[in-house]
Image 1 (cartoon, rainbow, N blue to C red):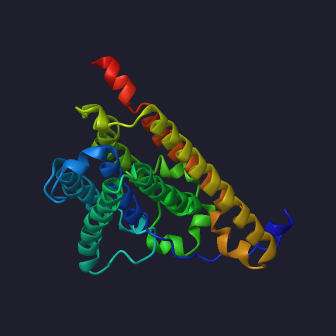
Image 2 (image 1 turned 180 degrees about the vertical axis):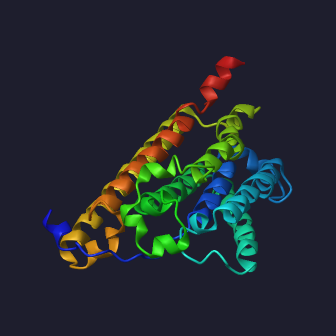
Amino acid sequence: SQLNKRYEVLPESHPMIQVDCFWCFAIGASFAAFAGNRLKDEKNLYANKYFTLMLLYIALVFVPSGIYLLSSFPAWETMYMMPTDFHPLIPTLFAASNVIQAIFGFVSAWVLIRRDSQLSAHAVWILSYFIMFAILGFGYRRFLFTGSYTDWNSGLWVSHPIEKWFNPGGFGVFHALLSMSPLNLGPIYYAMTMWPREAKEDKDLFTEEQKKKLISMFRKLIVGFVLGVCVVYIVLAWTIEDFCRVVYESGTGCYGPLLGFITSELLFVVMSYWTLLILPTQKIKAKRQ
């Protein structure tokens, strides 16, 4: 296209926002949101079953897996933002920040639940995950790159085949993530699917009407934000002369990052929307009894 022809020179590499802070925040918020009204009965935020389980998961599963990735694939884990001979304080701060963000997420949703705003509590984790997947989508070239920090900053990512991420010729990032997935995703999905079913009283469940509002809110948030981001992106691409040069690191042209963003948000919908569809309601609970 005319836009892409303007930027045939090697694009520059730009910093990328790290996704772990949004992921941990979303995890904490989702644990609280799916615990739901039962948190109202807890007198102490820091001494209850749901907060304790969330903290154990972050400290014993999520953070150790992150430290493993940081040790084994330091360039990839930092999204090629810093040399791999970083100061020992970096992994220390990395581990601490993940725990802190998860606590912030849980507390944010807990405050909303105590104020009878369960829908808002769910909106917290939905938007946090939306931002996380947006970052991964716009920066998908970094996510799917298997070279070193030097390789990335030398511009080798431009000709790097994406399929090499899945078959790097050895145990790579893809294989590590795949092997970690059951341990990392299992507790998250357990909290999202089983905790609502463990509710012993009707008052701790959504009504059928509240469930419909939650599902409708999810659809409106995702569709609204995706369309909004697309409109802003296209307007910027056509009105700012250097915009395409800045985002051209996708290697697929000016609109490559936008396609990556849309794809990643579709993945988010596939991974999370069904958990809302199967939420038990007061009406279903009553029939069961």
